[in-house]
Length: 170
Image 1 (tube, helix red, strand yellow):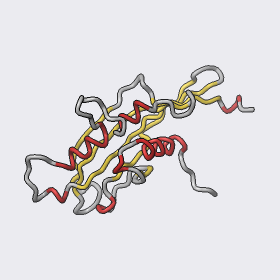
Image 2 (tube, rainbow, N blue to C red):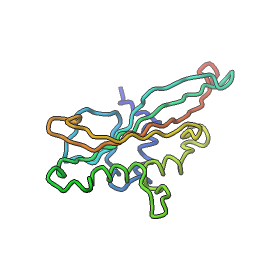
Image 3 (spheres, rainbow, N blue to C red):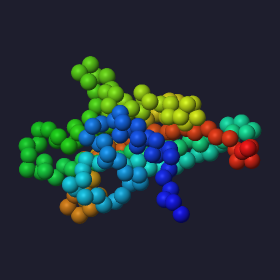
Image 4 (cartoon, rainbow, N blue to C red):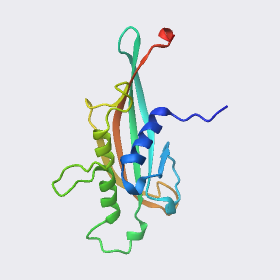
């Protein structure tokens, strides 16, 4: 049996690899592992939080997919650095929702990509504009493994997919 790859999550990974933060290109994982190798950081992971399914019409289903992206940056190297500025925290902010000098969201940030490229499949699959994108920032003290200290960010957003109900397939 062939290995399953979720087309929605992989579509978003491909979008981020093409247009997203430069230092995360090729560093995306599907699912959120507990343990990561510190030398592999920074890294991003994408997973489903939950999915709500409803009838969009008598022949269509609507899938509201709540998705979470985790961005993880090593911060242990900063333990002996002056505490005026925590660079790893600012790296997480830059990758997730970095702004330019005019305070506009950068197109190469994760949020910039999610907003610029909302139509993922010709109106069939789209990043929902009617819901909020939620971002949380924090620390991971040995969350990713023994001795690993990370600055992290979580992005929660919704992707909507409309499809014909199975009984209406040709």
